[in-house]
Image (cartoon, rainbow, N blue to C red; front, side, top):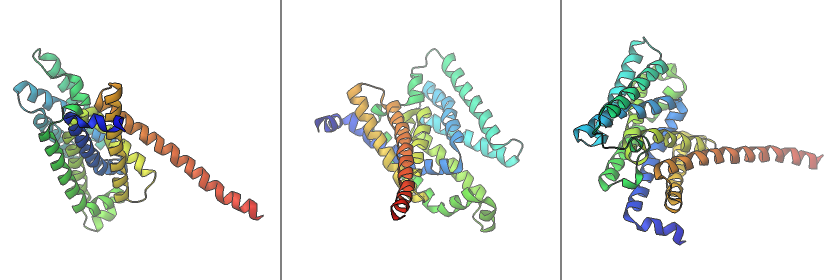
Length: 285
């Protein structure tokens, strides 16, 4: 068992694992709603929308997460503004802002010769460099995520399945949409250090998709998605340690493989379940 325990005797690996587990929990809660509401494009767009803020904050000597948070919040607010005015469709406004913010981030990075941050860290993160303040930030983000998800659960459910019914019941579907966008923004920003702006989308989607094959309720999907995400963090870090691969992309890659494996196992289980009644009827006959 030394291959399992030894890597986490190093303090940086222990911090990475703790950070990965917190990211898994945050992304499980938010990702379940992202998958249910079909908001995957929004998550990717906000992830890329962080880049200009991260780049500017780095150039000014500020913490990159602050710049990323401001940039992501500005993008989320602009998306909501365009949607309320109704001049552009939701996906069109996201697409335009996505390209615009990504282009601005690349221009800032390429124009500054003094830019000291590796662009791959911005995109793919560096979970092995997670520090205790980053862990504290993730813990705070998890508490906020759980609080919002629990307080507005009925609003989210009603808005996800029938906005007209939600409006009739006084559950305010527009507020639910704003809060869901805020949760996606919070998850992306909080997970930036661990898996970067690009791979956080994989952590949002893959565990929730894997869990959705086996569950019938939103809370159950969140719990199982958290388990899949935690397994992705643990297995990904072990592979990274023993195979000398990049930790963040390895974690996200494991999450995708688990989602594919879950789908395959569920399909086999469904076929076996379907064959049992047929076999019983044949024996009876």
